Image 1 (cartoon, rainbow, N blue to C red):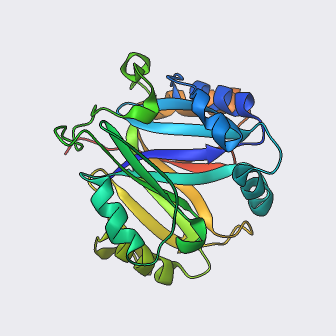
Image 2 (image 1 turned 30 degrees about the horizontal axis):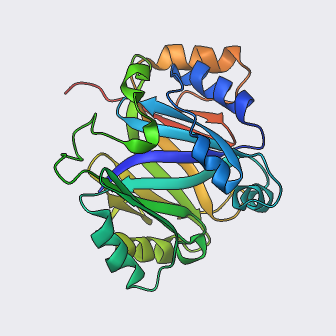
Length: 260
């Protein structure tokens, strides 16, 4: 499986999009008119061949709005994974007793959103595209990105998603649950820090220590120009250190990979 997209939720869309694009050196590729079905507006931002999405409620009593209330404001909302056959994964995962809350099937894109109450407080989607396409290829087709997302790709500041961090009151138990849901083994990336290795990164499970409860607490980006990113964060008054920035209420870890 591949970590293809992380979705954030915000009380107001445009200020968050302005910060994300300015600090991370990215552009918006698509605003999906169909998310109004969920009472939302959105912006989809390519990170090379991966994606960051921001959603914000435009109606009362939405799932996203309740999530904002539960977690005390802006933050991580959803993790979207890409696999070879989402329909087969749907059958396997629902067979474990994990409920689906939304499905979509068309010839080029299939997805299943799984109930957060069954995944430890995180909205998880397992998706696939045309079976003839290599989903591990960096610029593989991706319907949620819009019809021409490739034109918006910029990779001079950040190069791609390489991890997500899920926080929980019981990280070991949640890690075991996700391993069963995804059908992938657990390993440790540090003492007592279980993770699941994906094709392009990993999902880590850590204690919920910030008072916001379970959810997506952070994600990791491979960085091409750390100095430029941190200068932009400083200019916009964002919280930052040498190894992370905080945007839309979530910590974004900066992974700098040096040549061997």
